Figure (spheres, rainbow, N blue to C red):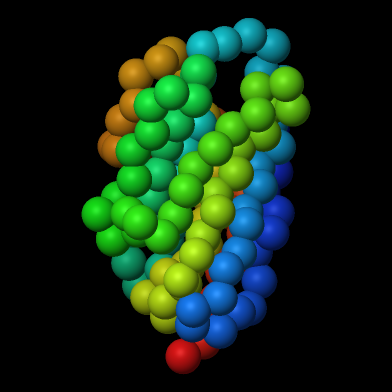
Length: 123
């Protein structure tokens, strides 16, 4: 059984940084893409960033480019989201997701999802 557990969320001020982590268990073989999505109150879940199996290919949403960086450690089955220069509009629940295969997609087509971690950015 695949489980994804996010951590690192919290309450910060605008301009601060946070690092989210997502540890995956039950993934016995690759390849798989790891990604982050977020959902703000009253809004639909949206793509934030994703990274390929090798780590050589990444994609970020336009709204976070230049501020957020995604990375992964396959030895630890863990994906990270480094978030800098946070803005109040980044406030959301952040979800980790895994998609079997090696094709990055921004669509909501991932196979496994975590429970989410809250990120709140005050102005």
